[in-house]
Length: 366
Image 1 (tube, helix red, strand yellow):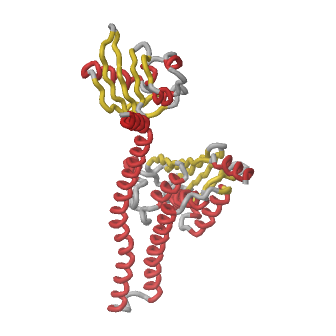
Image 2: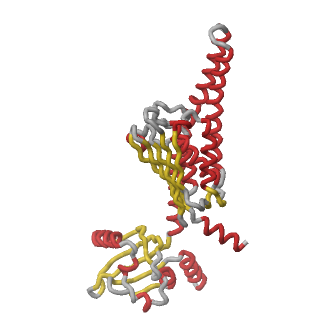
Image 3: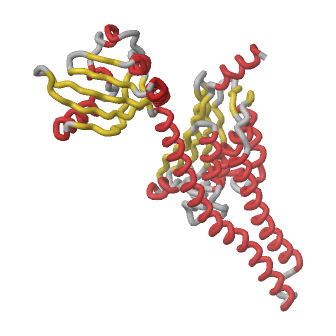
């Protein structure tokens, strides 16, 4: 008999059930685990509160109260509770209400299910991520096969034409056309490499000079066909050091700045490109403004999708803005685009600079 009682006692302790008897006005009983769960020292300490105050969400409390009035019993209701120190935890509540000496009383069992709720949240996040990856994979297979096949098909057609009628195309013309096809293929493969690196490489936080990144991108675009037609103005603070991932910042800014050249409006007297940076302790704000052809407002909600092309003038793969956003999101940042057709486009990029403090603290403790 004593062994059975001991087993039952051990089982009750291992289950960690918080057992409470309460009226609306005060707590009549709390077992030790209930006291510990809510952070009370004793039943007297608990009675400086009332039952209603244990519920973190008042709307949830009123909903459960009405439900219990109708059914008398609550079974395994998931509730957000509040401890004495005002921290919250998720609990599974089973409660029976009854009248005793004219008071409405409650016998309740609460189990802490915070870990379960966190795990469910993580599973939901992973599920959403899998859905996103599956959708991107479908688009990737369809669009990548087309973009890889197109230049190959063009080269095969040119080769066949040249073999049948060598006099139709001059050798230099034939080689130029072949080179153009190869360049398109190389550019697309390069973007696939960037896509793979951004998806798989971890974020590497280090001191980065924002001005040097932008100047390096502009140097790369010196040979762009529209470069002579675009006037560039950069507005940076004197100290341009931020703490972030160099490669991911470069990826984001290079695609945004290149678009300003790719979609220059030749009907305007002069193209304008303004690049402005504001560096704060906690975050970095970058704006890229151009007076190019602009983007139809109906296209903006889908402009960051993989392989999406917002303009019939687009000659790229449709990966640029997708890669730009994915890179900045990996940094915990965001990218926002506003645009008016035939007027221009404003791109706002924001990302954390809180790593500056962590980086410096890490150096002090190293």
